[in-house]
Length: 103
Image (tube, rainbow, N blue to C red; front, side, top):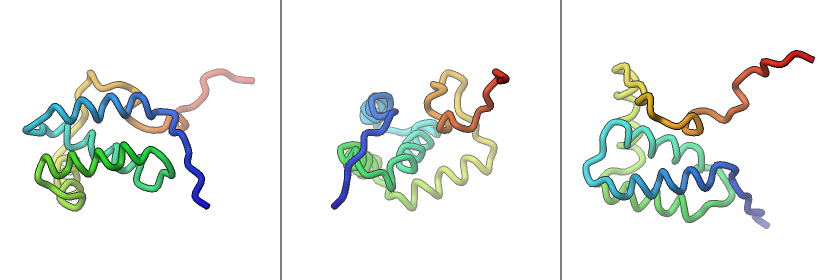
């Protein structure tokens, strides 16, 4: 039996995905944001609404996952970096930072 999980960043990711739905002509940041969300939720057992909406967004932008991967690989290889106004919640898991307090 498949047990569904709740992702701790669901509400933030829901807001980001809703914002992306308002975009008709995606920018580099939009492509990277969608790719990041797809990677985060691709094997996640839960948040089916997000996965479904990400597929709808790909259709809206007339691309598939393979094309999105090609676009974002090219962007990163050309030196793309997210804009500074990005939320710190958008990158990484939070577990990749060191604890500054010493025991």
